[in-house]
Length: 114
Length: 111
Image 1: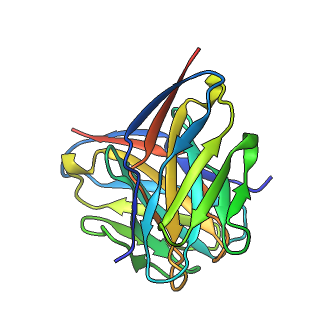
Image 2 (image 1 turned 90 degrees about the vertical axis):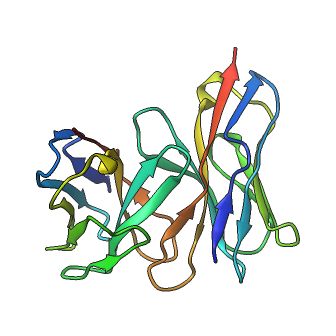
Image 3 (image 1 turned 30 degrees about the vertical axis):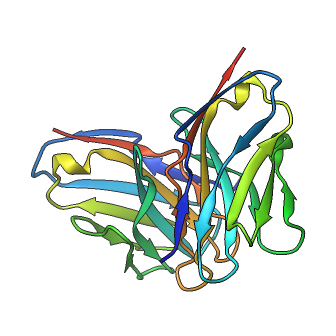
């Protein structure tokens, strides 16, 4: 069965520090993978996506993610966080047939301390 | 600008009452989705649609119906609302392989 696991429910970092949010997936083939961000009282916004090719993908606001087939992972990274990055981050995979529905992880609440 | 809008943004309903949540998209996407968001679960798919007149069950369809009268509009219907349906509901549109575009959400409280 397909699934996405985000093992860290909450992450707190200091402004200017580097960041890694973890995501592990379970899928029989190579999935389409996404990171979304949700700011308070708002909908989800796409940060970046991976379909194929270069395993390191760049997204908005200097976020990047690295796909690893051997580790079944798609971790999100940022070299230097800003207080405005505080939000909930969701990792998701897309079923590559039929409905193309997204399967979401439970999310990671990121707090950036000034 | 292409967008997904939802109405109402907030709703308080009584147990046993009927609730209709509406979604409109200007992306001209064939696929539309209804998710609910609960703490610790991320977003879970309730119903989806491939186009006007089509509705399909997602992972958690019990207690919900859906209606897709046109390409642009997709409704979620709770015929007999229960407190367990208190949640935040998101609508999204997508054209298949690319990412989905989400609305701002509807916060539903069932008393």
